[in-house]
Image (cartoon, rainbow, N blue to C red; front, top):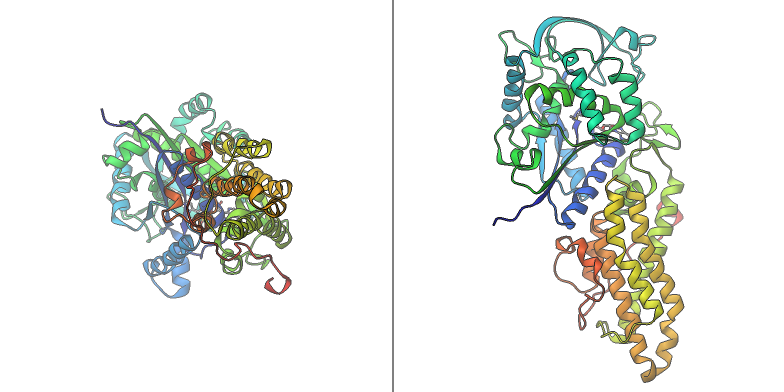
Length: 524
Ligand code: MSP
C-alpha cells in the first residue's frame, strides 16, 4: 500500500514590484515560513509558495516614471525580493512571477471557463479607482475624494469592461462561511468583514481594464487586459499547475492524500479580496476553496502607521545587517500576536534581544558548552541516575511538542515561542540550582553527578535547537553544530523532542562564539 500523506500548502501574498521589500512584507513571509518549517518538522509534506505581482496600472505607471518598461522594472525588483528572502532564511518551495508563461496561460484559461459558464458579461464601468490599492470603489465608499482604506486620492474612470457576476454567489458564499467557521481568520477580522462587506450584498466587479496596457490579454475579441487582482489571485493555483497538474491535485484538492490543509496568509488590508472575489471566482469555475484565509495585522512604528511621507519606514535589512536575521524573525514572531496590529520600537527590539536572546538563550548555550569543555574535555558524558531537578527539566522538554502543535493551529507564534523559552529558562535555573562548579570540586565523588548535569544540559540544548528551528533557522543550525552534530537540524523532526536522552554520549562538541552578543550603545 502506498503511504498516505498529510499535505500542507501555505502561501504569502504576492508582492507588488513597484517598491522594494519592507518590514510589512517580511512580517507575513516570516510567519508563513515559520509555519511551513514547523509543519515540515511535524511530518507534513509541505508546499510553500511566495512570489511577485507584476502586472497592473500601478506597475505600468511606476515604470513610466522611471523611464523603463514594466518588465524591466519587474526584473529589477524581483531580485530584491529574492535576495531579501534568502537573507531571512525563507524556505519557499516555489516563487511565482505573474509575468511567467506558466501563470499567464492558465489565468486566461480560468477566465475563459468562467466566461463559458455565463458568469462574465460586458458593461460600462464608471466610478472610482484607487490606484495604490488597485481597487474599484463605490461612490458611497469614497469620502472627500479619498480611498477609505489607504486615505489616498482616488481617480474617476470610465471604461468598457468585462464584469464578473459576483452577486450571483451571495448565498453560496454565506453558506460556505456558515459551514466553515474558520474559513476567514482571525475571528475579529471575519466579523468585521462579514458585517461590512458580505452581508450588505456582493456587487459585480470589473475584471478587465481597457485603459491599461500592462497585463495579461483577456481571451475576448476586444483588446483589453485582465484586472490585476483577477490575475494575481490565481497565482495560488496556477503555481500548482491548475487545472490538471499533479501538484494541484495533491496540494489543493487533496487527492490521494489522507489529510490536506490549504492556507492563504495575507495582510488585513487585502482580506476583503481574499474573502469575496477569490472564493467566488473559484466557485464560478467549480474549483475547491482554500480551507483558510488568515489576515495578519499591520506593523506600525512607535504607534504610527509606517509611510514614506512620515519617513518612519523600518528597513528590515538594516536590522538584519546589524543583529542577524534570526533576531528580526524572533522579534516579529514573539512580540506581535499574529492577526493583531503590532508595533515596532527600537526599545522593544533591544529588550527582546538583550533579554530573551542574549541573556536567556545565548548564555545558556555558551555557559553549558564552556562547562562541558572544562569538566569533560568537550565530550558528552553518560548520565547517572536522574534526580528531581532532571525529571522536571525532562518533563518541560517533552511537553513542548504537544503544546506547540496546539498553539500553532491558530498561528499563535508568541505562545509557541514562549513554550520553547520555558525550557531555556528552566535550564538556566537548573544550572544555578545544580551548581556544577560546586559538584566539580568534589572530585571523583561528584563525577557521576557532574556527568548527569552536563548530559541534561546538552539534552536541553538538543531539544531547544529542534524546537526553535522553524522560527530561528540559523540559530538552530549554529547550536546543532556546536553540539557536535554534522547533519542538518532541519532534517530532524518535532517528534524527537518528545523523547529524552537522545543526545549521543561520546559526541565531541564544537563550541563557537556567543550567539547573541548584547546590544551595546555604539551598535545602535
Ligand atoms: N499584490 C497584492 C497582493 C496580491 S495577493 C494575490 C499586494 N501587494 S503589496 O505588496 O502591496 O502588499 C503585500 C502584503 O504586505 C499585504 O498583505 C499587506 O497587508 C502587507 N503589508 C504591507 N504593509 C504592511 C505593514 N506595515 N505591516 C504588515 N503588513 C503589511 O497587496
